Image 1 (tube, rainbow, N blue to C red):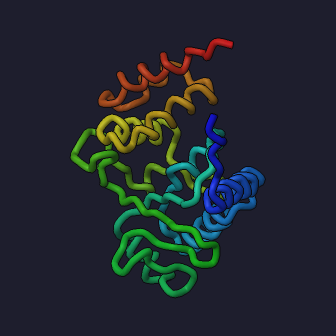
Image 2 (cartoon, rainbow, N blue to C red):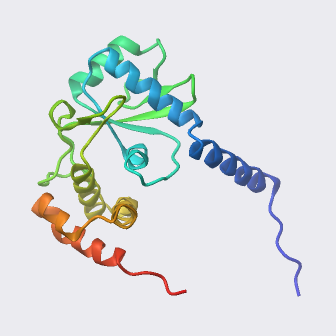
Length: 209
């Protein structure tokens, strides 16, 4: 019998760094959470409409999933204003001329999605990223897209882009964790209703013990 394989020091070190990040994240003390708090304070102070999307939004809705970056929805005008006000003053571009930003204080990327863009494959479809000025729901400290809108976008993304299947898995987990009803499909764009119902049925299946 051959001896068991050994982990390299690099792999083992990466494993423990991941454990440490997950622990900080679920304690609410990771750099990505501090970067999001800084970002929303800045956007609110400057009156720039926005909505937090992506994995950080999932956490706000109760689906806990660790992440390393912040996804934010802006208009093209909002992004231009943000860059004019903040580049070199707490933020840099990920590369010259990029839409994405970076918070060097916390070492976190801020990925920007523009209103009007199409999710998934980027091709025109009945579902598009909305204007956060009219679509975002505001709380006392953050603005998010309503849950049905977030689900629509994730469904449209996973349906049209094979590399975005995680978006479909996110919807399945939202259904399971939040116990969303199948009737929620009526609140969704017809383009994604059938996929929602398919995932809802899958979410009702439990692993055998």
